[in-house]
Figure 1 (cartoon, rainbow, N blue to C red):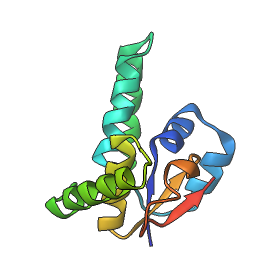
Figure 2 (cartoon, rainbow, N blue to C red):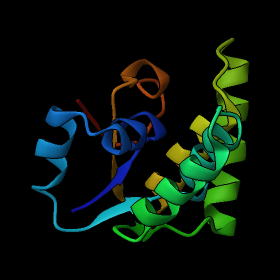
Figure 3 (cartoon, helix red, strand yellow):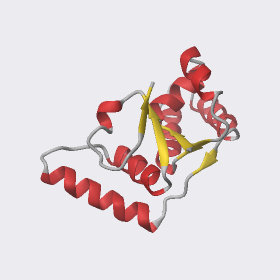
Amino acid sequence: MKYALDTDVAIDYLRGTPEIIKRLIEIPELFLTPATVAELYYGAYNSGKPEKGEADIDEFLENFYFLDMTPRSCKLFGKIKADQKQKGKTFGDFDVLIASTCITHNCVLITRNIRHYRDITGLSVESL
């Protein structure tokens, strides 16, 4: 089974949150989506110490594998976003991109924000 980190879990990992690190060291191969990486860099550049944040993320990324955003995951993004809109629900685009990429790659998403993902059909989620 493949596991990918949601942005909130990646941030907690970067901050050294003990329960996050304890769980993640048990997983031999951890993945990130392009949307997660983009959100991490946004956070760094939007912080009071952008150079340090960028360097920390650069080093952090050396420990992960990356899921590609494919035409199939983009198609699924559109379907999920449209389905949710028709149901009167809205999710952030990055959350839907993360979910569609994980579904496409048959990857479990590890998150602390289960409410962001609970209504997305086909997504496997592990809550921390």
